[in-house]
Image (cartoon, rainbow, N blue to C red; front, side):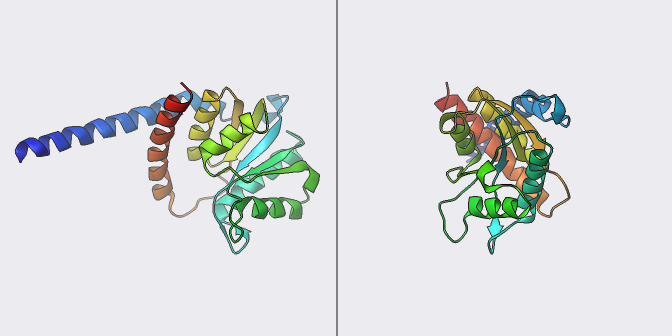
Length: 197
């Protein structure tokens, strides 16, 4: 029994070490791609807003912050195209439809909005930007803790990406989301390692 407990403890410590190492590696290698001075960026193909929860056909507060940041970049002339990427496969909670409608209400012309309804995950969104939309240079819009992973996947897809953090206000549940993101970074690190080797 003591031997089994020792093996379990060793495995647990190995998993923790791998998780912390991959997170450090991802953050360290992408932090310089998170920018605040967008005027220096030229030739941006599109502003890409990453989707998240909707309720009663309205964006959640976190998604609203992402949309507001993306719309601000559009209005500043960073790109003439804005892509709403999320889960558009469910009629009753269609993220991209809600995102598009919100942007139109804020004055964005419908013809300048692209909806990527198969952005079912961060990985899928980046893959779609590269393989489906054939983009070369983009700005990703989401909260800072999420940008590191999105930028890392972009780098592995050889997609020239920059991050615009949408941390416009504080939200409840931040500890849960950041803890979940620790696991997601490790997952996508190995996913990239296996699929994009």
